[in-house]
Length: 123
Image (cartoon, rainbow, N blue to C red; front, side, top):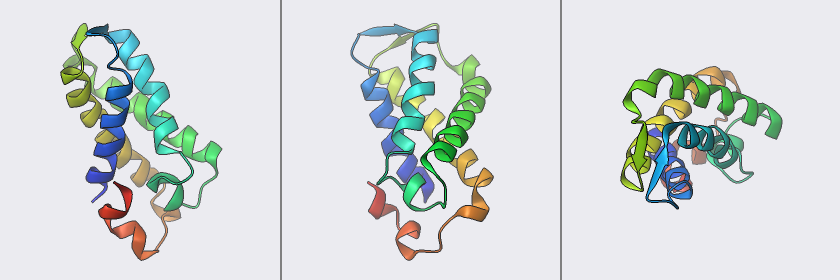
C-alpha cells in the first residue's frame, strides 16, 4: 500500500533532479537527501496527514530514513547517473525504502483514519 504512495514521491524527486542529462553520484545523493524529506513532509502528503507528527519530526524521521537507504543502496548507484532513467529507477528504490523505514519508526503514531489505508488518496 505505501509503495504506491512512496513511488509517486520518489518519481517526483527523481524528476526534480533530472534537469541535466547526467549527474554525478554525490550530487544526486545530496539532492535526494534534501528533496525526499521535503516531499514526504509537505502538509497534505500521506506522511503528515496519516501520522501524528510535527513537521520537524516528520522531516527528522524521513531525513534519517533517506540517509539509511542511500547508504544501504550506495553500491547500486553509478558514479554518473543518466537522467531521467537512472534517477527515476533509483529514486523509486530509495523512496520506497525510506517510506518503509518511516512507517516502521512511526508505526505507533499512524492514524486509524480509513483514508490512510487507501493508496488512491495519495496519488
